[in-house]
Image (tube, rainbow, N blue to C red; front, side):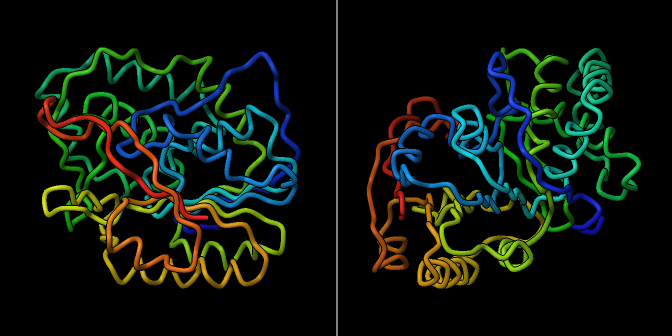
Length: 294
């Protein structure tokens, strides 16, 4: 599916103040816990357009919409094609996505989970976005810790975990779909996406890439068949520096490591403590230090 097939014209957001909308699926490395820390670093005078080219679960986007901080164009994208197709389906057909998700849940068993895991959903045509979204949300709901990981062939390969969280309701998906109406939604590499959107002075770009690993066992960068390695991190740093030189506000999250600090020398670096729960062992879960770059 081409990026333009997923794009929509941005328009003013028809926000209903009675709706509380946030991430509607689990996502390893999601920013739900630190959105207020991120918002503190957005200039109070910000009135420009908003770009988020590593969308993930969209925690900061939903938070800023909910708090009426986004007043101009919004551009959301991700390199994970299945993820973006899920957003697109929820935007257009939330009730249908929910109905199919419930059908998956009724059929759930370990055998059914691993059967669905083997489905090559990206081979489905755009007309099957609802099917792609329902499968994505079903697997996300039952996968270990909400992790999304694929092998080199693009096959989802996360083991089944245990969850006590409820499925997103139809009303939740409808509210998310309404919220997404303010955005241009696309799939693609972060640099190509920004080149197409053409950020200008006064705009804000929030980067939340796969983190620079702090150890060999913490390297969860395969959110798509193309790994995000050090060359990509250096390319991202160069893009951020160019945007900064053109008067565009930069906000970036990453691991607090010597490598990250060296990469972003010349930017403002602030360390915060964040609770993460990706480790398979509960005794190894707890606060870790992360870096906010501005």
